[in-house]
Image (tube, rainbow, N blue to C red):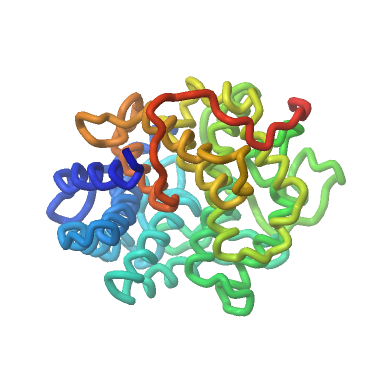
Length: 380
């Protein structure tokens, strides 16, 4: 069986879930428990519908994609004609930081390529609403009522927003492309690794506590998300669950901006080698942020396809990771990737991350993986 076949049958199942207004069932942000609007899941399924339309040529998927795109473009989803209303937790921003907007923007951009330029114009409008701190190379959030907020201090949010910007404009001289290039210039500062190669979750800004160089002047406030206190063990588990999520966005940026100096940074090799360490492979098991929330199998596979040399050490490893994801979470009776999770609508829609992959043949058995980028590195 091939990955493309899984995508087709799952998209068929999703057609039956689509509501008359074009939306797909909303989830609640997995382990975070935030009630969400259908913006996130509808954006994800929109990308899948468009992918299957390209693969199959079936007008049903184009029509479903058009309904989903119209739902996102509806003024109701942007109640103040600013950012998308993504979640309804009154203790947090309703835009879901930069990441909620990145998911909507990337889907509208795909719609713009196939369904009409107006979707692309909307994506660019929402992206350009977000103030960019040129000194730090980071974006601020914008609340759904249009008020500028603080800098989003979650690294993967900044990274995914940059990837969405790269889809809009990858050229260094355009107004959007220049910001994306500046973000990549500064990413070498904001990308923090544990000694093992694991990506740290938060951006450590100048002037923030625990900087080795001491207090420094700082041009903004960090976005603070209220929540329960995280122990060191929990923080580490979360970083393991998000490691490949970061790599997915880095891989897409590499595809759009292949000549940037960031790709020659030595730390890139360290965070890739981390994928072959026992700390990572063991840490994914029974991890609420991995497989059943972030589809790490697809994310690692994309990192392999973009960053790994095509040699015997990595041959077939991308297919192994895809199969590993599906074996843990794909319900072959329902034909949806919603098994073993507390948030079935969100995980099922996250199948869309596989749309960024080259098609692969899925192995029949879960054999032990090749040790790509195997390295003995000290744990943190």
